[in-house]
Image 1 (cartoon, rainbow, N blue to C red):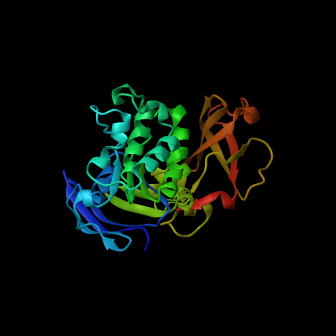
Image 2: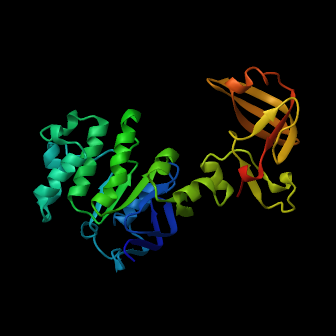
Image 3: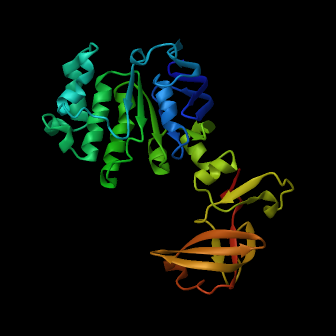
Length: 328
């Protein structure tokens, strides 16, 4: 294997447990670990880095690095608070790793990193005078300059102004290929994960719930907990659609459900329901419709339905097609 393999990894620290983590991360994959605050994301990164005691194995290119001390694992770690050295300027921060290890072609690498992350104008600056986005780029540059085999990014965009996020995400997307490094990026942001990830693992309460190709994980959750975490709406038993199994559930996107008051809908599934609430939000309505004992959440554009469903208790039809249904 050319990448990183985590095998039966468990760790208990500060009354929190990572439980039997198994992951395979191939070379040149941008891997995103997605989970809520307190789910164990940062603890997993720190355990990979050797900062927490653990059971299990961590292999890099078939070599067991879990037996190595932290400083011998060739890992670059970027925390969300940047952790820059306040007594050093930007250039000194970036070059810091050269104090304790030999960096091959250090000046060539430094020049490339500075150009790539657009840091030339900042090199003599005191780090305390930098903006959040500038600090983040410096922290990433410092990690890359150490020539790590594995780059761990802990919520790297959480403190970044939204206007700068896209440009930094573009840089992050290129880093693992440009510098031949395996990247594990921790976040709770779905859009961030969707843009960056080749593969995603969902972690909850210290356990991996689902792992796979990003599009598959984000669109086809394997259980209700993951579906709710990812923001899936309208989760109901499949018996509602006429299936016999009461153990299966399905979800349907609020944006694709069609509605009407008169005539018929040209959809595979059609139901009559009572309007419970209709909320006007800028350019669309949020519509809540009760069908039997189930309440559907629907989004409809105001330009198409201006004023149509403002009356509570109104009976309307809703519909969607079979290919709009996600089975969980």
